[in-house]
Length: 256
Ligand code: JEE
Image 1 (tube, protein in one colour):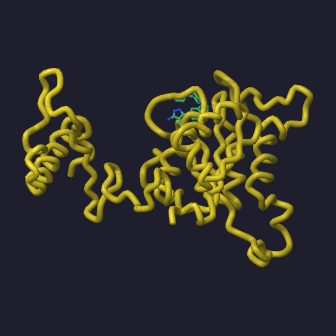
Image 2 (cartoon, helix red, strand yellow; image 1 turned 120 degrees about the vertical axis):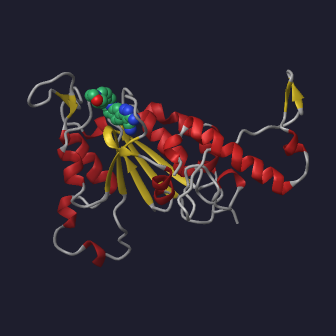
């Protein structure tokens, strides 16, 4: 049993750059798809435009630099991809329909979102469906998130404090963080419980100690003696101390 027998996590991506996501066919993500752990489908946002030029952008009300993405193509795309369009939601309650499932989570990367964390990756890896909406230009008309949140959970998130040219790279980052947590990924069915950024019951989350492999001496640099000693308790103590030192140096915000 590797998890491949469980229903795959269904991931939809709506984008004006479908080709960008060919990276998901490579390496580990590609293996996870082949093994049926994830089912990724990429959709071209321009399929939901109406004009001959397939326009997705317009200038912002109130002025300012750059262009915004128009709400109509996004609204129609999200209705169709996520299901549960407003018309369908009328009349009979959705949970009366045989086989009806809860709506997917909609994830919208934006530099003005809350930070995406390992805890989000852990939670979202347990969802049945995720829909990602990476934008270009200066982002999407704010009513798209407001409207979608009337019928599905919407997450406006940023992957870090720097400015990208669009949401595509952020989506690839988040999909990778989520997919590696799926049972069966990398041939490992156990859940990784001792990772940096996964706070334990006490809330502790330290950076990892430096790690070494053979040779024991390389370019005049020796692997710390204790790691060659076979004394597992001493190794554990050394790693704990090295982790604290490293965390104090690089990420003092993680220390109590
Ligand atoms: C999604 C478009 C480009 C550039 C205006 C005004 C923002 C948008 N961690 C992350 N960094 N960047 C993104 C991200 C960037 C995106 C989109 C995500 C869609 N863009 C863009 C500039 C601006 N700037 C001054 O403050 C900064 C807006 C991201 C994530 N996730």
